[in-house]
Image 1 (tube, one colour):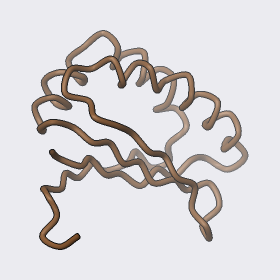
Image 2: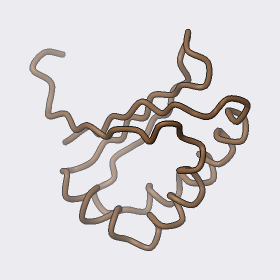
Image 3: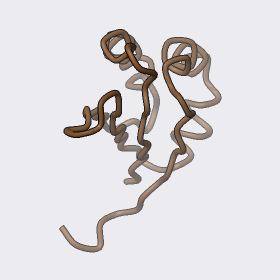
Length: 98
């Protein structure tokens, strides 16, 4: 399993709308082959900041599967207008300690 991680900085005053849009967008990513789960957590201290964690079978499930699908276009339409700046996506392997 691979973890996709991104810090999402949402434009001021748009957090509530972002949360609604994220709930609407979840089925789009969840329908992807190789998708294993998603969490979006609000920051405790940073207003308008969220942590995105997506569990994938492998990187290809995200990059070649979801990102090249029609569902990704809808995901982008629903969510990308909220970010400033656009988030950097990072992938992590299995834990070395758990």
